[in-house]
Image 1 (cartoon, rainbow, N blue to C red):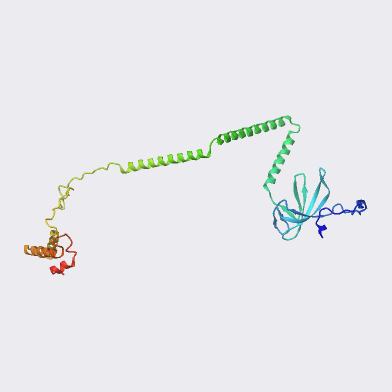
Image 2 (image 1 turned 180 degrees about the vertical axis):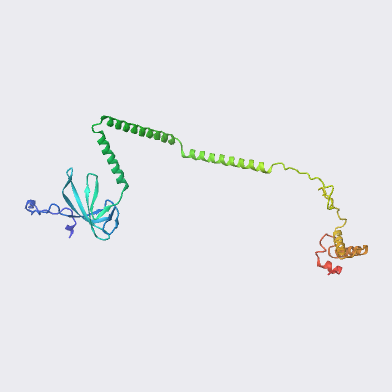
Length: 296
């Protein structure tokens, strides 16, 4: 079984290849070939799109009576991947391409259109130059001018590249960072100048004249000045004044005996609870003070 996979077969010493019978095959015999689709096509039967690079098991044959400069043209048969309709195409050695013969239509390819336009332009130019020396000279001068422009642009690109080669990446980064810092400083200075112009303006002082004659009999507006408040002689005086005001609001006129009694009771409470030190606001916040005075 090992002789099946070897590349070289054994030929006996008495082997004569001329004695082998020759098999006659037809000239356009079809050969099975595994190939890939060279362009995108659309099936005319089912409308299915078959894209470039799709693999097929096709049949190849020679096209009888068609050659291009001695190059044989081949025809390929393959089937649609959806409806299994037979499609055919053949080679085009003149344009180095393929032609779809039947069963499908080739999709539009923009690069093929550009190539066709270029070929048509070249043919038209050749036709114009035949028998017209001035036209041929004009076309040659235009071509030389175009080449000179291309060379000038190429030299400019080379010089620019040589200038950029001397600049390092670190230097470029440093320049960019320095420019960014300068921009930030300029912006900060502009903001500070704007803030100073808004907030550091001298305020206009408008003096108001006092109203001498008031129609409603109201008192004239007093000028603002330093308030001179009388400092109480004792810390508990505000409490006594508050109690006097409460009694006056109730319609009772405070008498000297009542004020003296309240001061006496307050001093007694402070001597018992606060150690003899009177502090403003401590006694009214204490509940025992009201019980001591019999108010609650």
